[in-house]
Amino acid sequence: MGLGDADLGVFPLQFRGAPAAPELFVNDARMTLARWPNEGWATVAGIADPGTEPNADEPPRGGAFEYDGDRPARWDVKTGVWLVGYWGYDWYEEAIQVRAIDVGQRQIALAAPHVYTIRPDNPAPRRYRALNLLEELDEPGEYYIDRAARVLYFWPPEDLTGARISLSTLREPLIRLANCRHVTLRGLTVQEGLGCGIAIADGQSVAVEACTVRNVRDKGITIDGGVEHRVEACDLYGTGTGGVVAQGGDRRTLTPARHVVLNCHIHHFSCHQRTYASAIHLHGVGNRAAYNLVHDAPHMAIGLHGNDHLVEGNVVHHVCIETDDCGALYKGRDPSGTNNVIRHNFWHHIGNPLGHGNAAVYLDDGDVGDRIVGNVFFRCGEPGKGNFGSVFSHGGHDNTVDGNLFIECRRAIGSSPWSDKARKKHAETFDWRRLLLEDVDIARPPYTTRYPWLIGYWDMLPDRPRQNRARQNVFVMCGEISSGNWTWSPEENLVTDRDPGFRDAAAGDFRLDTDAAKGGPLAAIARIPFARLGLYASPLRPEPEREPWPYPPPKSLNG
Image 1 (cartoon, rainbow, N blue to C red):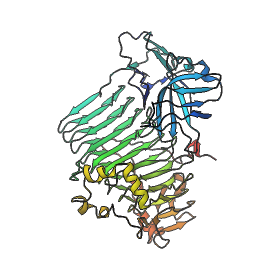
Image 2 (image 1 turned 60 degrees about the horizontal axis):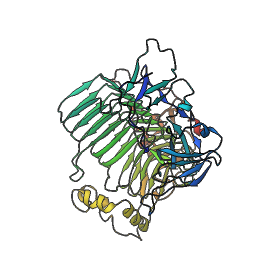
Image 3 (image 1 turned 90 degrees about the vertical axis):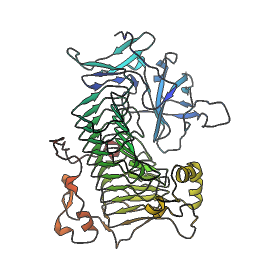
């Protein structure tokens, strides 16, 4: 099929996600750029050269690795071969062009260094797959674009008679609203572009209601600035680098933006960028993600950065199924971003046993002063070889876990605490002086008045350990309760290896009957509005999706 004057884009030397090149769709389904292997990943057999590190005192050099089998012998490096892989860690993938293939030595040399080099630090093997190869166009649904000849090769998955075939080439957002006020988009289907679906910048009270955003290369919906924008009752899926990003509010003055992502169904939202491409990401101050259904992704579901955000009433499942050292909700590396509330969400079937560990809620790298209240965690997280729990704090303190229900979690709450010496080292690594005292100022109001736990953050406290706290939680049939610097007591929490009186655990109904919740932690659990979590019926969503139960564990957890 000839492509005429279509903009075919280029594959850069290295990239994350997908290059700004056309994508092929048939009857609203994304076709697959020819690749190998067709499913899953190939593994690195050995590391011949890790490549140079960033800022190394030598010319940049791509790494080289050994491979098993003979498949790479058929690839034409001159035409162009790209490998996307988890080269250094299982939480960061990157695509890099191949410089050379030594068939005799069974070695592949990359044309550019990976940001973390090729390294064996994580327990699982390094993984990769090849893409954009005519030689690997070997099953229905795959395609390849010969840019030199301007020809599209395609193996149709079905008879194309009457089919709607689309080749996306538009690099800009399909819909853009800048400095708009009181505008509503309702009932639209937005699809098949190389940019994001809908981009909102500044303005006030723009609403995106009951829209479907699908099959875009970039994010589904972005909100950048402004106040009181709302995304409600929308379906987003098949997006390349994430679902909804809502950014707004003034972090110096702690003025909220009050953006809302509400009653949305977001799934399969990181089709190209496998990591840090969340379904919902809240930036800034005072934004909210509520009563959404989020599922099926290799990495995280919800990301937070900033202050006073509220994440409540969501149902999140089957995420973090391909990656490691990760969380379904992730926040970290800036202790000034505090006082976020994660309340009344249902997290289930999250994580995989790659080895390092993963969590449902991950408060990373010194995160301080966030609250996890009244959540339900069922079969969430993997302790791995570290201190991970379903809720995990890395280097943080003054976080609280109150009134939550943990069911069949291998470790419920975990932490890897930092000494004052380690905190000082990380402060230099992450440039916290700038983040905490220049971008904002935690030593002055409003930070000192709103967040008293940040007062004296820089002080060394050898005689007073910094701790996280857990109270009024119920731990049911969990393998282990805690690790690290969590303070909790059996008097304030309930640990049991029996069903405490769930209404119908086999059907996924973890509500407690009234007689089972007469006081203490069980009374706190009984207040969780379990029947109202996730999608709900409204004029914008008359018939919310009802998912079947029980959910089997992901295949990676079997055995």
